[in-house]
Length: 264
Image (cartoon, rainbow, N blue to C red; front, side):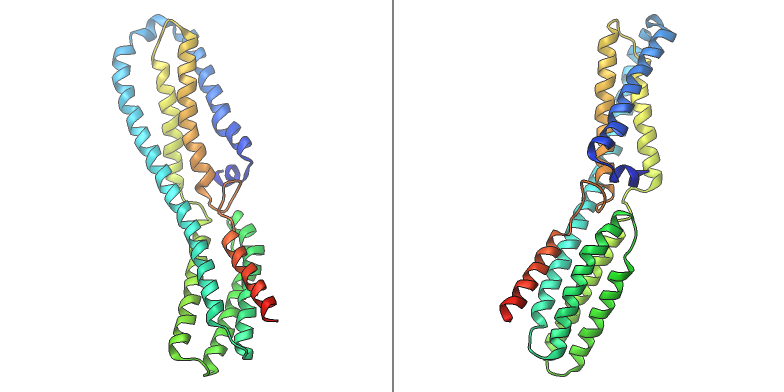
């Protein structure tokens, strides 16, 4: 469900996750008032006020914790893409030279970036892994091994080439891991149930001005469900309108093409 909501346009997700639940919460209060009556609910105001403060604080802490964790992991996804782009740029420079092995390594690296941009991002948006990109990464390792076995480069350069290649692989593995979502299902259940109970707790209160109480319940529900909206929007860092793009890799690929054109 979180993957579906994350893939929807923001306005659709806002309607499904914020607007409709808030309207339902407001109508629920009206129905409770009509069925129970103001006199019976007003007796709960003093005791319910203390308990609602505790309930609100507990849920606020849980919601804030989830938002912070999701944002940190979203930032980790951005960092992984940037690290992959940086390692690719360094590897390209380390593989400079007119020898055929070096040219093959640069070509394999360029192909890998193109396939990663074209296949990895659409696959990660669906919580899948592109086998074509993995194949190109294996081909890049093979050309790097041939470059190392050529014997024309110092050992320190060879070691750095494979270090940067390993950095690329680790960064790709990180973003592939993060594409499957961050919030575990048990936490989703706790957040949704906790939000519903927190909003429903307002039904124990009774004020003379029903419109004001309905408005207060609506404002509370909007705030609660907006927190869930934020979590859903960035829970899958590579899915939906709010996602980590392939811009750093595209910029590196553009630099590679410009360097090849300048060399020729």
